[in-house]
Image (cartoon, rainbow, N blue to C red; front, side):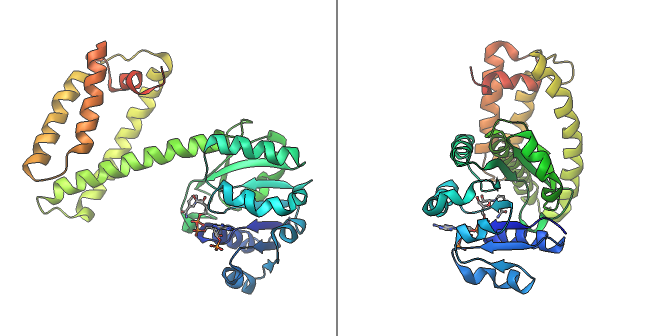
Amino acid sequence: MKQSVTVLGLGNMGSALAGALLDRGHPVTVWNRTAEKAAPLAGRGARLAATPAEAIAASPLVVACVLDYDVLRALLEPDAEAVRGKAFVNLTSGSPEQAQDAAEWFGARGADYLDGAIMTTPEGVGDPGVMFLYSGPRPVFDAQEATLATLGDPVYLGTEPGRASLYDAALLGLMWSAMAGWLHATALVGAEKATAAEFTPVAIRWLATVNRFLTRYAAQVDEGRYPGDDATVDVQISVIGHLIDAAAARGVDNALPELLKSTMEQASAAGHGSDSFASLIEVLASK
Ligand code: NDP
């Protein structure tokens, strides 16, 4: 018999989480503010609870995925003792500081708390290739890992409760930068009638090479030494000028490359002109 799981919150993501658990044969109890959203899951065998406390009582493991931490706290507060003795996995997005506060709140009420972050959209839930990040006490993670693997690959980041949220914020920032760069590039080639579908396979192949740069530069960042033996910051300041000129000539917005150029120029002014691109960390990191 597979472990019973309660899912609180049946928005787009919570419904996908509950669905993946049902698909793998877990008995699932659900609760949602708008009860009608439970109907498709009830049709697949989920049990609908009338209140959050009733839902929590039904399973040793509770997974929460609501809009934000304030919403979660508000729905638990009326019967906060319900969480005592439960393993509570919070997949609601929030800041590291909110995760820390939540860990204290759950700890004070006798719950085993893991904070998590979902690195996919709902259609990726259940795919063993997508990452679910977790932080909190190792024994709690170990005890729940097999069930959590139903949702995606569980990646444990350590005991600090805010670590999963910190990585989540960092990875989303990386995603937005990468996607904005791709859209800027697509706008540039699109000005010469290349379609996004034509350009994107070339872009994806280029990103595979960029991945190799990241691996090399990670070692430089950790050592605090940035030998410019591949391409220096000053050379790249010159090269990004070509991008800015090409975009300007085609009426493409240049705010993004101008920002990047300015960051490179700050690194150069700080003495890193002959260093590698990795030296920009000296401009970006906390002092
Ligand atoms: P939805 O808007 O689809 O669902 C929001 C959920 O929160 C619903 O269950 C909703 O209940 C509930 N909720 C909102 N306000 C209240 C309230 N005042 N009281 C009680 N319940 C409330 O959002 P998602 O499912 O997409 O996102 C949920 C969480 O998952 C967010 O923290 C999001 O950042 C995170 N996430 C989402 C991803 C995605 O791709 N969608 C990816 C990674 C993380 P009701 O149905 O009654 O409105």
